[in-house]
Length: 247
Image 1 (spheres, rainbow, N blue to C red):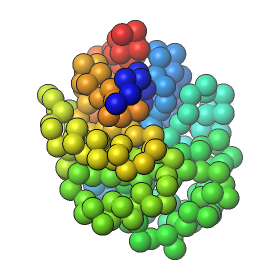
Image 2: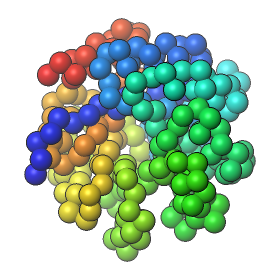
Image 3: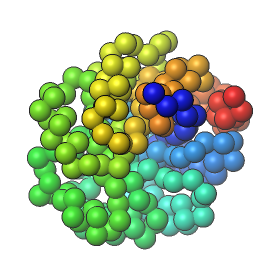
Image 4: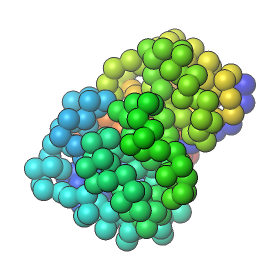
């Protein structure tokens, strides 16, 4: 297996604790050495997220953050960021906005990667791949160790450029170590095709990320960064990213 450096993706919830802080954090995360950002649009029922990220979603919604405000923020800063922004949302937000309109907002903001964890594979009629392709947007499927292999193969048959693999079954949140199930699943995905593998759910230390060498291409850290921010502020988040980037 390849021993390339694992790229670092930082997860943020847009509008937590406010949009100005989101902008500052995005710029600071890039300056600290992150390779990409996963920006989550807040949603009232974030089923894939653990307590920390769910709480951040609810706080952002209490602030009355709107989809238009988030895209205005992205219009302003995403095109000038030297690292890619992966936009993460739930399907209800896309469909309420309208798939075509949502994609046009993404294109205007320079968003080329979209993650929708609760989008069922059989809902192509609601978010068809040809629509995404017409806006030059990659849909990043979310794969879980617990999914049926029939469904897994069906998803991978569309030959996505990126796949987002969860290292455990269930919701996000820090874990002390990566379980063997996670490594086995990554190895299985690697053997199925030439995908850029994003690995997430539970990562909280540089050593965990280094263990993913040869198994994944990109590691996502979300809940741990949020905990650092809540306890010690933005500098603690930037310091953590620098610690990994400097190794």
